[in-house]
Image 1 (cartoon, rainbow over the protein chains, first blue to last red):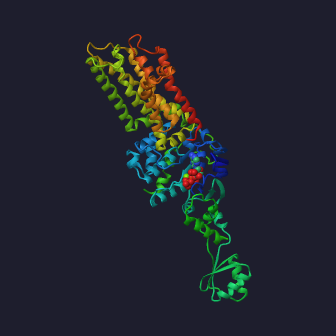
Image 2: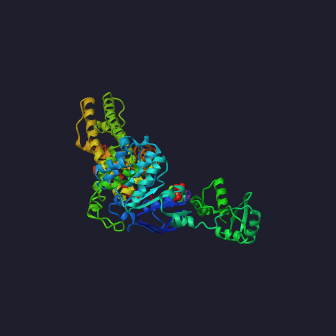
Image 3: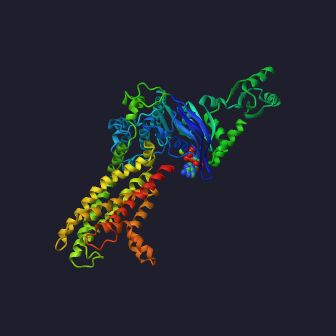
Length: 314
Length: 282
Ligand SMILES: Nc1ncnc2c1ncn2[C@@H]1O[C@H](COP(=O)(O)OP(=O)(O)OP(=O)(O)O)[C@@H](O)[C@H]1O
Ligand SMILES: [Mg+2]
């Protein structure tokens, strides 16, 4: 279990992480989400004892990272892709890390097999593709067969096969009772891999929830209604306080009332409905709404779509 | 490669080590203590890092080439009666002066041991594996000395041997001069390591190293202030030359003072670099 308590990190005037608290339980994959610059990497570096918090504390299974006697056996991490000397082979890189803990050479070979780099293990890492570098980084994380695994953007640069591979790997690691924390700024990827979500924006906690709960928080979804007497229904709905848009002739998009109320209202006035359903919230939309105000770096198009989402939700 | 098979592979690796593990209970088992970080293990790790880079061997080869080549060139120059750069009275010291350039090459090797990790991001992995941090720098120093000191001894003795072949009338073999030169080369290698630990950038560390070892010593005496001339005696190269001197009166410092000076150049930047490594964000 990872326990983050009131963690704050300032770089001069810039606050990268602010009073952040959350826990990452064992036995499931936890997704750590947030837009660019939200403070995900900084938080992970503080958990790993690489950056010193301005205040607050992070512990892994009850101790700070540096207090673990055999840190690689307790926690494995991938923090930067391809953070390896380009002149060194993948095997020697893993071996040099294994040596610090007295792990046997056989363990290095095993990990090379696990991450699918065995055939190129003797090649200089400088010649590796981004995906191969990423696999090596994951190999480093798995080296000590750790109870806790922390990966910063693990699917970056992986091809679809690789993405599937890592998804399966992470789920099986969690199923073994391990603690798995992975960051991403892609909700769609997290939705497929993680059960638990920690969402941050501008260094602050926005949500600590499950994927299912997060979708459920999306209230006020537009209700889609198709009726031969759409105009009449629209009038009734407006009177009942909803806002109504005509999506197509005969098709209304209703916000402010739920599908049940819309159906009851139509029934009470004998208006037949051909279709009645609530637009399901896509996780991506919920996420955009959630992080909308906290995006630091955004393009005009992303701002626009965020605003649209916000308006739809409103 | 089946994803499931690969995904479960790590479990098969260490059958005993966590059979009784409960997810929430992570009190260290004996196996874990056994697999903990220890200084001798970090030394092995640093040796693996150093030996696994081709550049290490290229640098060591270059140092050998420079030292022995210059010894031969200086030796034959002495024989031909050309100007001797002030070493006229002491041909042994003159021949060993060729190791001065080799010192720089070895200093760069020491610097790259640290700055290469910052440049490539390897430092993150290193400090994650050894969160106490100081053992990383200590182990680097141990490995550097273990590699450089024997080479420096061989190059110093080899330089004198080559000198004795090319200098007219031969050269007296002086253990004092050989050990002095060995100490100088080793100290500059450690100076490179310490400077890089302080500055973290290869370019900055090598610039400072070149300035200290090569550029400033001949430049400072040209300045008008008296204290600068005194300071010049305590530069690494001057202390190294004092140790290599075999003729009375040519050494600017006593052997003890010169050895102390070299030790300070070798260790002070390293210690300060170690303290900063401990304190700074990685
Ligand atoms: N060493 C540093 N010095 C100054 N500012 C920093 C430093 N490291 C991070 N920051 C700032 O802290 C904020 C958080 O950065 P961080 O890298 O943790 O974000 P992130 O969530 O990982 O983003 P991304 O999705 O882009 O990886 C950013 O605004 C960043 O500019
Ligand atoms: Mg990041």
